[in-house]
Length: 149
Image (cartoon, rainbow, N blue to C red; front, side, top):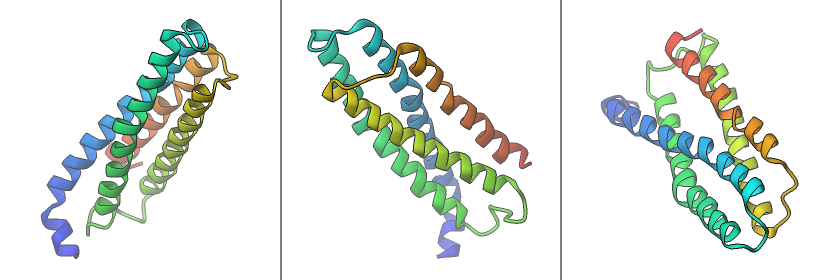
């Protein structure tokens, strides 16, 4: 198995990068949709229904598959011999941030379901602030992998 992973490493890495880019796009965009939902839509109006559809489709058809592929490809990279230096700090820093990113994704799922039921209690300002979470995590993840601190 180790030899196969080494042979397909460039393809798995490419797939991982593409999946992470797609997942991150959703993580950046969904909270912004929530801001518009809170600030512009009234429960039951056309905009409310349109935003519910947009949020659902973004999450179900882009974010969920992309996160699964990012995780699977990422784990394949972790198990590829010679890729991860387990004596360094960076793999653990990255892992913590990826788990936090996944937690944020799941929090967004719960918020979308609240919008679906008409039970949202957060403000546009709160969603704007939450929109910074994936950016901060991404910075730590990229620095961890590239600088390997």
